[in-house]
Amino acid sequence: MLVLEGIFNRASGPPPSYQSRMGSSISDSGTERTSLLGYSSRRNATPLQLLLAATFGCWVAFTGYRMIFPITWCDNPMDPGVRDRIRQSWEVELHHHDVLVANHEALQLQWKEEDVNRDRIREAWEVELHRHEILVVNRDALRLQWKEEDVNRTRVREGWEREAKENDRLQEERRQREEGERLRVRERWEREVKDHDRLEGERRQREENERSRVRERWEREVKDHDRLERERRQKEEDERLRMGMFWADLVGDERCTAYATREYSAHLINLPDRYPYRVEACMGTPAVIHGVTYKNPSRCFDDGYNVYGYWSVDHNEPGCSTFWEYYKDKGCIADGSGKRRIEQFLANVPEEADWQEFCASTPTTIHSREYKSPNHCFRAVSPLYVPKFQLNFQIDG
Image 1 (tube, rainbow, N blue to C red):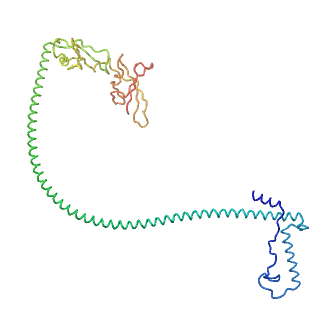
Image 2: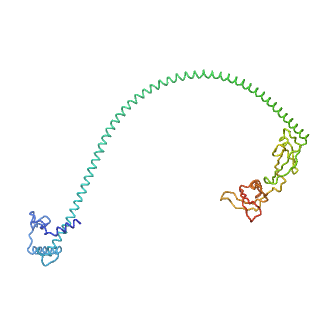
């Protein structure tokens, strides 16, 4: 835009003076007759040839002029059309000149930037050269230091070698002294070991004799204790038989304690009030329940007046026998687990009984395999089934 504005501002003023780009005169180096090829004709041209050449030259000049400038009836510079044509050609030339000037200025600016960059690079090179010179100086100093260190190391190595030889000599002397001392110490240790083994053998023999005497005394004490215990039991049994102790009022509890298990109780008859071994007499008096003899009750209780015995009977108790029914196979617990979930319902559970105890103690047989108890129990009351307790039975397999 600035270039175009400059062109328009210049075109608004008077046209500049025109100077032909061709030379004002022909060079003095030759004439019109001089050959263009650089050598003169050996013979003169005839008038007819000169006429034809002049005619041809005029025709060529006229044709070229008409090709450059439009054909008009008047080429007078005072003609407005001619001036406009000349002014337009000047404007074109001026525009090309401005473009060349702008390119030249841009090129100069680029050269200045390149000069600045070259100066920066030169300064960087100078800095690097200075650093390199410093590194060279340091390297030379370091090499000199290394040489001095090599000399010092050589002296130190020689000193070490002398010290090593002296140390080897001292080590050999010390080793010989230590070897002699070890031999003397080994001989002394051998004598001490022999003395220690002899004393240890005598000590072990004394301890073994003492253990034998203690063992014999313990055996006598155990035999005496067993004999006294048998005599005491026999005496209590004789006293119990003489007093005629027996169980009376043997009754079973209304509640079942576990699967097919009921607790029975009775009180001991013919037991003196001041008899000192009341609980021992209870534990030593047998009882017959459902045709089976129990040597002693499960537990005894002395209230100060009577002694009661309690038995846990797990046979011939159909009222306490629960069983599983309504078999349900719930399928595998998880894919690849190798375990199946089986649910069954516990039937014949006594009233006011501990259903968890019955669930945990009631066995079952599934796929010809006996299970003493289920893995899990839960209570689920349902109106669809008669049993009051519906329990989950889970097996592996």
